Image: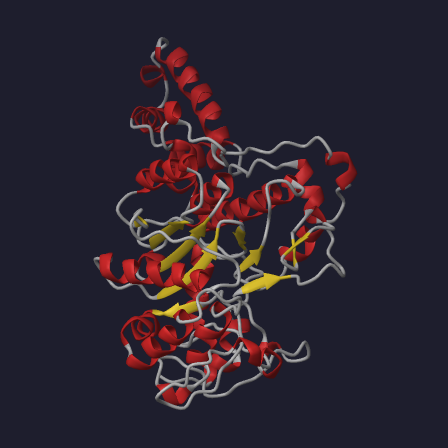
Length: 438
């Protein structure tokens, strides 16, 4: 952990204090030296590790503890790492739940290394997380995004192994009542491109609304193989910057007409193609679950649940870009993404589509799997998450991204400020941030 060096320094300090105590320094020193040494001793006894080390290092050395650097990852961040030299690389996988070691492996980052600001506590977020096969990726994702004021729902695919499901149960129990696990009776078999992909998020949205003791602000949906590019504090600032709108993609829909539901609705609607990955305000989620128009659209999609029509890429976008339907925060101006117009960017997710330019050389369902050579670019873009990583494709890439985000978290805690490169105006200038229903 980033603060592991504290323990070694603290033992040295305590050892020195024990040796000096036999000589009774408080009696031999001046009154001011007495006060200084006794204060340090009291801090040591009370185990105020971080306070003591900051105090001690600032007074005697004029320096503060630094983040333990990883030379491999530092090279990867500037594009200086040769993938060929990582052929036998093995990362800190968490494939099996360490029953004999308890929960510290998962909760330690939050408990020791993360600053949870009052601003974050007053702006709780919610996550709908879908899991299928990688306990390593799921546990490390939750470890990075967990905060006690947020809510989390985890849906494990019904066809996943019993070993994975039991491991996830234990993992969820590590974090507490704000992490919900979809029960066996509600779990579904998620099939790529089918209605079940959307259904898993709807199930979690319902559980998050029903079981929250207070109202969270925004819902984000993620899967186990995605990685956060923003800290929780940055996410809170972003959700405030979009001024009550939602972050939902819009694409030109004519080429996808064959995916539109066949059922004729009782009201006029323009089907809109977008992304399944979204950031939705609480009122929009409530609309999805309770509004008659949203329910009718959902039923039309459910009727074709056995067809490969990607309804998950239609549902949120259709509601978000048909303001006449009245969904809270719906966009009143539709602008398709253009590289020349940053206000049109879809920033919820970075995805590289297709094999052309795929730096890892591996694609799954036409999505490029991220690798080591992607890192210098990923750490500069304004997107919320990146999709996606796999255990068997350059595992050093995930490890070094994890190193990078932990370093950001450490900086937030040590400076009590956001990364100076973080620019929230990027989000406040988006079209939907400025043209949407209240």
